[in-house]
Image (tube, rainbow, N blue to C red; front, side):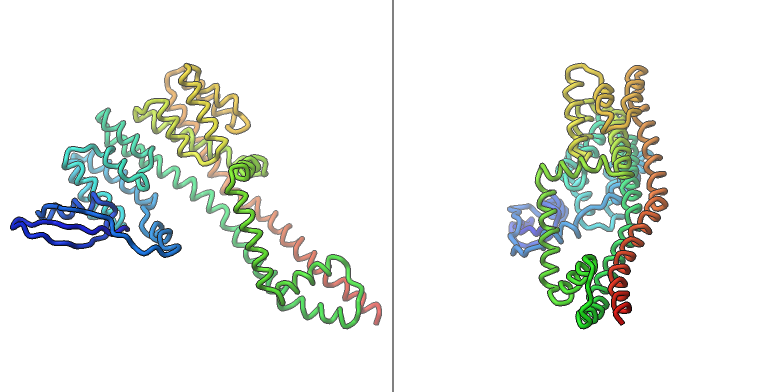
Length: 405
């Protein structure tokens, strides 16, 4: 957290200075006022810039999605039970373990005590409260159903959290297996292959191309490790640099649609995220245009963002929302457009969007559960092929040696 230098004056008129860590100036001001002192100045202290330190602080001081889910659900429950907003926030401020979130909630309490709205105060913390969170809270305040809006946004965040967790979980198994294979391969190239290679050179054996490739890799790793490492890092940096460009990132996003299994998962997960976000916002009373705009910010893939831009343009012109999804069936499954059309015709758009979200969340859940079953035989083929290539490349010259003997 940043540090702030302050100067205050007590009731006798005596001034004093100090330095404190806080999430922002508002949190510092709240703490100082609680002591009964008059604030003269508050300035952010300039700190020595150390490479990587800012990034480390941002990781240590960030508010996790799980904290926000607990916050919204508990705040909704306490308000439903009859507690005032300020008292409910005070309880949550005492309960939270995260120092950054604790300071944030303290500022919310301070702002509300001065007559500000909860949504207005949340807007001061864009790194903590996302646009969808703030918009749904504002809609709840305007409609008089704040506790219900908090419950809805909590459910929305929980579903998003579960969806990300399932997708990441499905990738852990193949990542561990491939990493283990790479480590074992490097060890064999460094310690096993050089011994065999020296034997082949002494006996002057005719070597096949595959064996020469393996020996070259082994020589690079064993005798030119630094060069090999720098080459790998340079290649990785080049790929990362290309992906950072707009064209490179677009090409990567486009390729995802055509990778077996992954393409289906991308379409289904984005369909679930889009429809659930729209449903949550519309059910909370958020305007259609604003709901689509916020949904666009939630989506990561640029192709899906473009569809949301088109949707905003169409809705502003009085054209149905369903037409946008129907025309983009290569990006969104056809069912999405059809269900939205039914929702528009029946006047139950929010309900239909929720049904679509639940359907595709179940599909993603099923796909991620089956992914390990599908990936396992593919990994076995890959491992078998790698081991087989290595074995044949090293055994073939041995047969030549035996034949010469």
